[in-house]
Length: 376
Image (tube, rainbow, N blue to C red):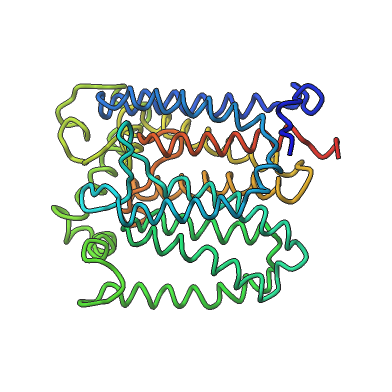
């Protein structure tokens, strides 16, 4: 099978390359490099390396025909399960969680790659069943296929990525053509069940969540009771964002009362990077970051609308959904809208695997954009 990028001049046109999307991703990544460096200077070099490697991966992937990649969706699915099993048996335990594989030269977090593979897999899976999406058999098959990933990620334990992956899966089904009648029926069941679940998991000796996970929910519901414990970081995060006011206290300031210098938040360069942005760059900086991420999501959607087939539409929609959902969860945690659950802010938080995987996702979107519907 011949790769189209080997015949790029005949296949692609430079005017179809979405340089606007590249510019947006570059802009948010540059902000990420600076704020990560301010949060913890020792990891800024890794952040730069992640952006460079990610940009290279994005460029290479953007030249590879996404339809060729989708033909390998079952091997990709298998690779994903093998990697998650490898974490279960050989993973590196850090702070009580086993989420990483130590490759010697770098620590790799397979759950970040899982989200990208899930988008590619279900783009092909749903494209092949485009007329059967609402059949019970198709829905059951899809649920059975996502279940192993959800279970293996949850067991790491990694509740935040489990929730993110589940939300991504639901959005992929919706984009694949799931009927509103079915969605309404599911919501009518899920909403009361979720409320019942929340009522149960806050009770003593509940069987569903680990102790620290339950405490995070309790701290979210009653932060004043856990102000020196589980709610400590979120309370300080909200205070830091508020203290930045309109324009912030200044980039990389040395104020001893700042959220980073006073050790009021652990790992500020990852899960609570938005607190650093709010404190140092203020409301204006927060808006810039949110708007840039929103524009990236919108650009991915617009490219998907013009895609030549359902697979391309689902890839673009999936990447847009992943960036949107993960952004929403991260900022919601930093502003105490959601319980404390660690997940990165796309293109901004420190994390080599996360940055590279997001760039890879953008690479696939760019390739879809190089094959617009007008050439069909």
